Image (spheres, chains in turn cyan, green):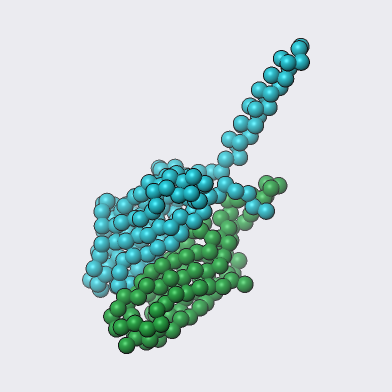
Length: 154
Length: 106
């Protein structure tokens, strides 16, 4: 075999191995269906209506390690009518369940903020449960340039 | 040693809604990362945060690995009476931090 031909084949085999190597070490990702399952596991089988909740996330994120998010719910926050709990879920993080905030009439205002990790460009969903038990949701699509969870530790 | 930063307005009018910001130093290790030799770094996160106003719980949160390192949480409460706001973070490996902040209601 000529040296040139040999190098071509060897290079191709090495590239192929490298590629499969990358695919096999890719971290486990949840899927939109798994997110729906996770939502159902947390809130039960009741109907979720879009509306009342407002999930604010920047549409484009440079660093997925700290994504600011704010959830606001349209509620008077009185003893009779208030937000009981706000859950946040993601489609493609390794675990779809992000956080739950437990509020009550003493919150005064249904508005909470935090910072979260995003493993990929994806939809984020906020689901809230009001004091009458009804469920409301909102979703936001986010584009992430540098994903969280991919960097190696020490 | 973990340290927490809490921002509560020192004084407020009765019935006013006050915004509370909390930040605590913590790695929030997800349990999904690996070292360079391939060993999984065990999970180490804060799982729960509770805020009580003069002993009554007014806000709490259940945290999961998708919360950023150094968890930052902003929420609000109604200034009902003068007293103390107590904050408690608990998590993996027996992590527990308690902080308090005073508020004067006029």
